[in-house]
Length: 321
Image 1 (cartoon, helix red, strand yellow):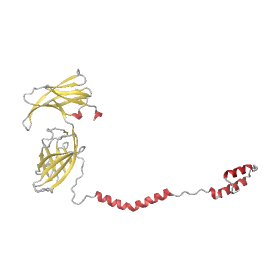
Image 2: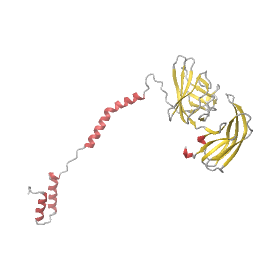
Image 3: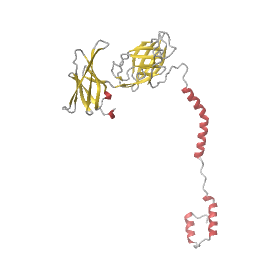
Image 4: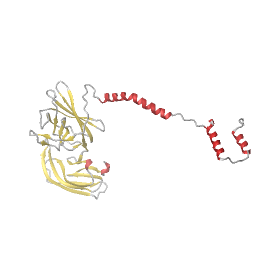
């Protein structure tokens, strides 16, 4: 019956007398079927295992190459003066007796470079950038060293030169210092400050770099008044002991901060500022400072003004920033 097809074989078997097999017969029959080559399962070729072994073998071969290559990439190149950007922090200077000074206002990198500067940097603000003390550490400066400070805006890559100054002798524990005036920053955001020392023959050495954050500009109150709060810090709420600066002479002893809603003309608020203090700017301009409290009821569009002049101010919600 070997010449019969499977279907024909089943038809023939169906015509055979039906008998039950004994237990021994069934066992012997199953053994014969199990030993038949046509029913043996072929063992699959172990592709995955061989692939894994090959991968491990290749990794063993190339691991030394990767190790030495990464070491070469991490190692500084000969003659390189690259300085890693570090996060600045507040730290104290020292007087001659070792007493700590300016621990909450001296900002920079210990034993490298720091700024005795305002805690708050603000766009367009000349008040905080007119007098800044720079402290530098290092014993290998060339003769007649000049300090150059440049800034790079992190988000845009825009560069801005801030100042040049001659370094003087050591002060407050630093090896050299300089009194400088910065060009005011013109963009909000993080700026990386880069400090470079050079001499009369053109030799330059980068001595440090760290970032600062510059806030949005102060709130303008017309052409002469400024509310000394950054636009990005202004939300609905109460503000105590705020300051308004007004330029001009013969100003009144008290002024009113007027806040009008652009969305609701009936929403008009007035707040009295007094405790007037007069002073003169370095360029001879007369300025008066006033102190007072005020309130912003809710977010929205407002006009803020003093002495009959005003500017549009948009009060956002904290989640808007």
